[in-house]
Amino acid sequence: MTRENVILKVDNLTKQFGGVIAVNEVSFDVKKGEIFAVIGPNGAGKTTLFNMITGVLPSTSGQVVFENHKLTGKKPYQIAKIGVTRTFQNLEVFSNMTVIENVMTGAHLTMKTNLFTAGLRLPMVVKEERKTMEKAMECLERVGIAHLAYKMSPTLPYGSQRLLEIARAAASNPKLILLDEPMAGLNSEESRQLIEVILKMREDGLTFVFVEHDMETVMSMSDRIVVMDNGVKIGEGTPEEVYQNPKIVAAYLGDEEEDTVYA
Amino acid sequence: MEKKDLKKIYHNSPAGPIIFTVLLFLMPVFISSNYIFTIFIMIGFYALVCNGMTMLTGFAGQISLGQATFYGIGAYSSAIVTGTYGLSPWIGMIAGMILGALIALIVGIPTFRLKGHYLALATLGFGIIVYTSFKEMKDLTGGSNGFFGIPTINLFGFEFNNDLRYFYLVWVFVMIGLIFSRNIIHSRIGRALRSIEGSEVASDAVGVNIMNYKLQAFMLSAMFASLSGSLLAHYVTFINPELFGAMTSIYFLLMVIIGGSSSIWGSIVGAATYVLLGEILKQLVPMFLPSAGGEFEIMFFGILLVVTLIYMPNGLYPQFEKLFSKFKKKKEKVQPPLQVGGDRVASGGENQ
Image 1 (cartoon, helix red, strand yellow):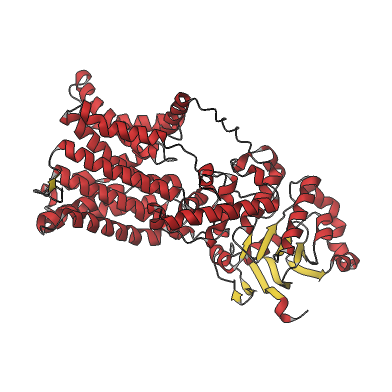
Image 2 (tube, helix red, strand yellow):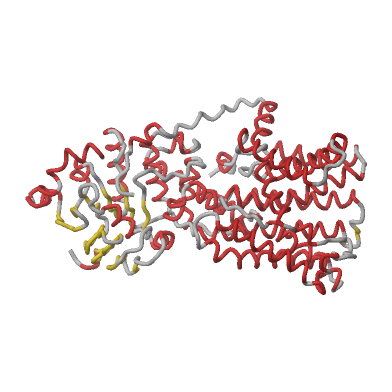
């Protein structure tokens, strides 16, 4: 693979909480159009890693580079502007809005309306609103929940709320979406649907990085995997390579039963 | 996409507001009492302030305890520009709004860097500083004695010099303010503000600059309050610092909460409740307690606030809405009850 294909470069990223090193010098590259998984047992530092990439937490040292932009030190909304957005492990839909409004909020960065043009409701505002609504509908169709568009978002079943988060993330025209445990709490039918959506979106040119516990999902969906344990990267490779690496199997896959209890 | 489609999201029917406006503007045909006009003018002043505050509190989730400060800044700007310098009242009004917005910017920038309800503290402290300045800058403001001789407003030679005319002037401003706010709420800006209330982390992740939007809402609320203060100054033609103290700020917040901060119409309900109950109290209390002073009002509204928060945490306006929809008897189905909880728990949570 050539250097140009690399879209996200995580370089010696470290996070220290007091005396505890949650993430220790983790490095990996994600290529354009890839579905990239980060796995590891509970407390391995996966979510901390995610929070550093998306700017929720500042890193202690190391850096993250997306295309030619340095993400380290930037705020989440600035990172979103560069084209990196995320979904959340414990759903964070805007519960005070309808489904379509959620997705239209996702399109925030693609719009130009400001306080005064909005207040005066100039024709360009109405035009932009309509365009955004159309786009939001498209995003909902892509994840297959367009029929729920005018429902209040908390009334949706859990699986649909997950899909809604992905539609909302997609509405900002991102290049990279980070999914934090996308399968948590979904039944097998919902998981299958979600995998389908993600694979379809990848075909449209999106890149995904996700954290996951569910090994079946990881093996069936990801192109490459990074395995973490105790804050350290212990391995990297394709699903097959990871399965055959005895070190990884010992550290992580051996604990699978225990993990499924919590997952 | 069809024109109608946007209405599917923001489907509140215009019938209610139109009926309200028509009734209000026709009222002087049937009732011509200066007392009633005065009451409605006061409601209008407060409704304007509360309208801006609703955007700040109900939509951006921030609490200001210094709205009377901006009310005062508007009033004194108008007084000084017209009374001292003899310029047009409209210039005073605009100057007040710009000054109000700038001050909100200066107070807001450091405050919104902090998470939590620091705005309440900052505005409370700032309010006391401005109140003291109104009192002490005697050359400019007339100090505690007040500022006399503010001229009335005129528009192309038409003087708003009696209660009836002023009633229309104020309520035209209130309606324009409501439409302006409503337009904002039904747009990108409104969604950004509401998303902050919905989930701050998600709002950040989709690219909403949270601090910037809180700041904008605060500046907007300051401009509404300032505009209302300017209108007040030209109506009463005499102002003093006591009108703009911390107590007034608290009453504004009380109106917003009692009226209901989830809808801009709550601002009118809250302002009307406050003014009307205040008038009734003024008549009733002396009958039973001849020696009672002005403090009974504070007590009464304090109790009312507590009762409202216990029985109608979303304020009075949602109750009005329910009543109104009963009369409408439309076939629209009632929204199903929320189903949060249950499966949400199942997600369990590892590292946050």
